[in-house]
Image 1 (spheres, rainbow, N blue to C red):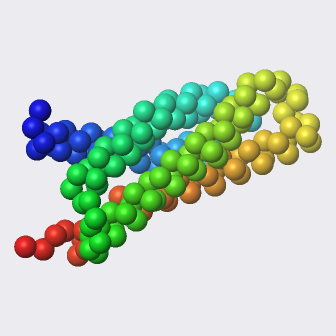
Image 2: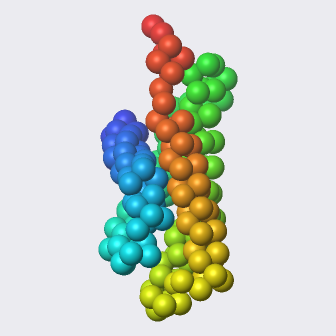
Length: 168
């Protein structure tokens, strides 16, 4: 395979996986996690947990693809690029890596614990003060981490047009 075909394939993988990653993260942060926090105790937790698990699986598959293809593209096309465009790309790459760290360390763990607590607790136990405190803390952690990851992915998607486009 020629180098140009490999670069084209890497760009296609990078764009498609980046769109899937950021789209799933935005849906989680804007719709699913807030609904889960508000209506999880009302019985919607099971269904919202299924949606969150599916979106989490999409993120888990697409995030590494976006990161690895981005590393390849940067190393191939922008090696030692200290221009304004290179700085924009490095900022986006750093934000993507931070979003992945936030997603794995905070969003994923909080979401799993929240789902386990909802599945393990009987409806009567949900009203106990200890379980209520745990649920509130986990809901807050899941909401904040999902929003932080989505905001960081928003930074990666942002194209500062005057800097990112090379001038002839």
